[in-house]
Length: 259
Image 1 (cartoon, rainbow, N blue to C red):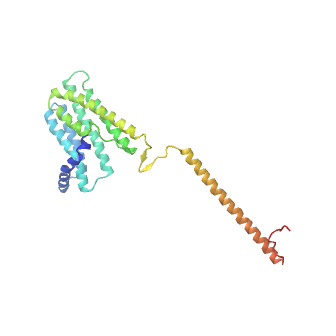
Image 2: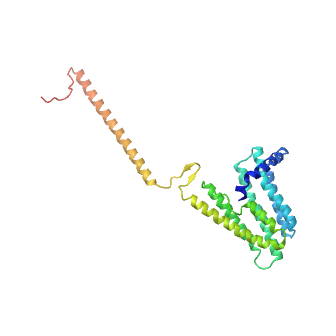
Image 3: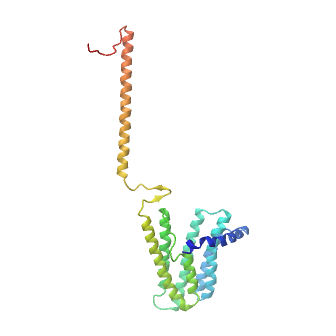
């Protein structure tokens, strides 16, 4: 939702910052890598019960994730490798931070409540996988109620108080599952049409009909070549016979006449 509705407004703010960071020698890969370090520090802070410090470090992690794209664009280094690196590190950062939350819940709550962050992580992985798989098939699967930016904002709200944390985690789980369901329906409906990959329609139907047409065209071309060869052979035979008759002093027969 955040990525779709307010992306243009955010880009207007972050692009000048990206150019500034690029001018001082900070690259997009450096921001991406240090974002993982910041996520690990966030996990440690949350796991040890320093929730307010966790909010500050979580904000820093979000800034790294927000600015690596504008820096790559400002330096002209946007690439498939960079996009892959950013996507992988995002998944690692999510696992680290939710692992820190699980550690905190194990220390402060009894029962199986510590499994809640792992359920959120599983739903988050499903959302990410749906987008990656759909885009590999040439289908758009963006959007939803709970993308990565919304999850980080909601987690920061939960870290404001120990009373808020567990209800916020349940809300994150419900909204993330709703996002996964919405993306599944969206991709399912788009996939009803013939899929398109790399700008070229996939030939998944009428294969036997196309093969039959190719065989018919091949047969027609063969018959045409055969007729041409026979005609050429007949003409050569006639000319050779006429040449022998001429040398023998005979008049070539033009053909039999009916009197």
